[in-house]
Image (tube, rainbow, N blue to C red):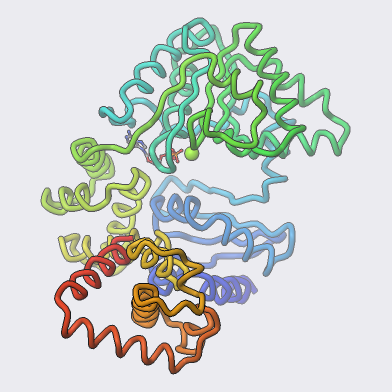
Length: 446
Ligand code: ADP
Ligand code: MG
């Protein structure tokens, strides 16, 4: 029975992700049992579990509710760990567990501590302010602290590190509570539905340190913003510490009430920037060391150079290297690192599809996408159109017919002609050839 269920899940998953990701992350999972709508799965190690949770939780939830029904759940067993079990639960169940029943649950991840947070120019202000806050929560110039920055740059890590340090300092037994804005919004809505708004408000009024992640999620949710505004004011008035994170600077957060934004800005607002090469290298070395991985310096340096988008991606590459080398018994060398960075990291970025090609090519030739799709026969527009068709054939699996359709409903023979024309120009025109190379570079560096 359990095998059948997991088999069905796998078939669904297969249709939704690339073959490489499927082979790496889903093939090695073993189905153990199925009981009371709970499917127990064995994953090779804790890296696996973390990766699944970070990258595939939505997909898994979707597939599970599809195959096992609405209340379906997954439980993970991690063999080499002291039998840790982890759950992916539906948000609703999750909310019930954490909010009403246990005010002593703080939701903090014990790995997110300052000790594991490598310092660099990109995070030094946030780090220093965070430490100060931890030593005197509520009573410092950084209240509220608003940390903002792009994805994977350490927002969740640092705001939780503050919470963990406060608990470890055991500062007058202060109560700390971490919540994502999404969960907060769900708790609020559920408390309305269940007529428990009072419990909800009381719960929040009694928190000493409120850490609230990803407040951009409040965008457009007027009622939730209103209730949060009141909670914020009440805590603030009572000198309770508030720590917030967002994916953009407060002034750029859209869909948030002005009065709320001005509260967010009233303490210290600090950005987490992208780490520079040296910081990336330090982070990598730290993680390699911590997880006891045997990776040579040149591979570590290579990763630090190539993976410059964010820290989550860096970790992703390490985890994936780990997974490959344990599953396929391969040595971690430069070639493996290269292939993983190409296949996994670069693939998770935007897929090169016809729309993207049109965007890049029209930008390159300084024309609009509309002109590209239009019937205009001006020479430079015709050339841009042909170049975009050429790359569409090269980069995508779309049929000639489908490519023609994306260019204002043109015939497939027009696409054949365009490809031919571009090939001819590449052979005869050096400057044109250079342009093609440059566009190619932009498309593949995506
Ligand atoms: P965000 O919330 O900004 O999307 P996270 O806090 O989830 O990013 O960080 C992504 C991953 O990178 C986490 O596993 C985190 O532990 C790690 N990380 C982020 N910043 C650092 C750092 N300075 N040192 C070590 N690890 C970091
Ligand atoms: Mg986060």
